[in-house]
Length: 140
Length: 354
Image (cartoon, rainbow over all chains, first blue to last red):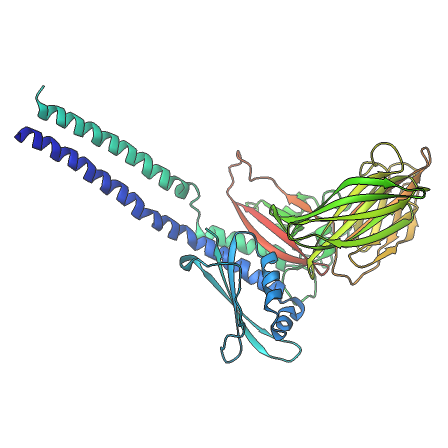
């Protein structure tokens, strides 16, 4: 009876060791993701700034904001950004009040890996000042 | 054998299996990380170099339009423009290897003055448009052609408005329609039966202002067989708002040259000609659209019209070294930008090697 107990304990040790090893694997995975996402964030930032510059070419973004045409802004962002990127655009006035009363977005942003690009612009027709914040994340 | 020995043997075997499987697991989890481990510094340098191509004008000034100038510094930006990512139409056109005045990669690489940085530049429209001839209906004096038009981006459908022109000889007809949210649409054009030969269907599709794509579909009109293959009668090279046509035979000349954009079409005026070359002036059209230049003529032996075409800027293009293959040893960093050329927006991918 005593000998049988010793064997059972060893089997139990194996299961415990298994849990430790695979637990370590599971816990280490987020570290790799976090390390790699640093470069991805630089890419996203450059991409976001490039898209905002194109969107604002010849003052078109300022005009669309003045017209409160959020749908058009969303449509243009969807075509200018590559497939596979989630975005959320928020527009503030000079008093830092949110102007867009409806969401300018194509889905949910993953809270962990969101990159935020701030862009300042002035509407050339009536000289209103706006702060545009574009948040980007890779779709997962 | 005592029971305890059996238990120990079983536990030891299980432990060895566990250690081996954990080694495999760790290797599988870490292997992509090791394989693609890159220095952030290298990545940043590559991004900066890619931006340099798009922000700098290069030298000498106007090297794109001046074919006699020796390139000393490589850059694609338009001169005297305050906004970034605005590229010069001629500098971009000279990157296309099918252009008569194309820049060799060696010239660009030498002008870059960085010996360890191979690069590749790919410029293309943001979305694709394709046309397919589905059927044709013959009437007493005309033939009506039915086309399916599809628009997509990264294999996902895109809704777009499109305008199209059908050209044969000096005859042009136009029509417009749109693709639905499924990216599919249709259009029909009719051509008179007293003309025969190669006809072109030119489609400009637009999703938003400045975001356009195009397609040119050659088809045989009123003749048996297939349309003439591209470059069979002439090779067209646009540069510095002049269209150069290099004829393959002295007998087949371009009789009609035309320019098409999303909203406009004009005939081109011949500026100069020799026995094998013709030059046409290209007007500076203020339309946010690529330009399609078409040259048509009459083949004297068959009495059929032929048609040749080229886009200006000459896009899509793929310039530089192919070093991203499986057996290439260089690391590659890719950056994607949106660029403006002649008021229309295109996608530009720059791949830098290490």
